[in-house]
Amino acid sequence: MQIIVNGTPMQLQTSPMTVQALVTHMQLTGKRIAIERNGDIVPRSQFEQVVLQPGDTLEIVGAVGGG
Image (cartoon, rainbow, N blue to C red; front, top):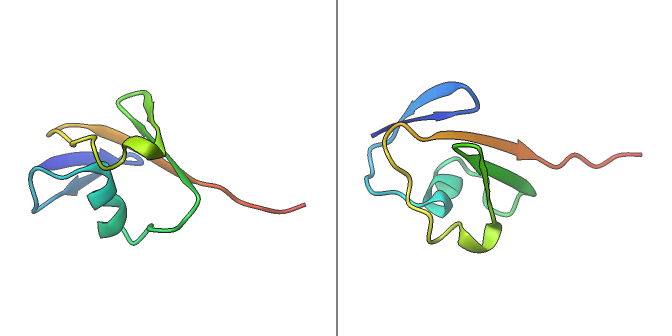
């Protein structure tokens, strides 16, 4: 299955895959991130329930602290 993450095509070997499985696959577990799927924010509480579909476009951003 192919999706687009931050503008870059990504081929996934596992299908179906949840947003949480993608976060784990990308080694982002425990990081402060926000994910937008096809223009809609995916609440962290729904990462386990949202199943990715071929052609989905995701934007993943990380929180940066500073001052």
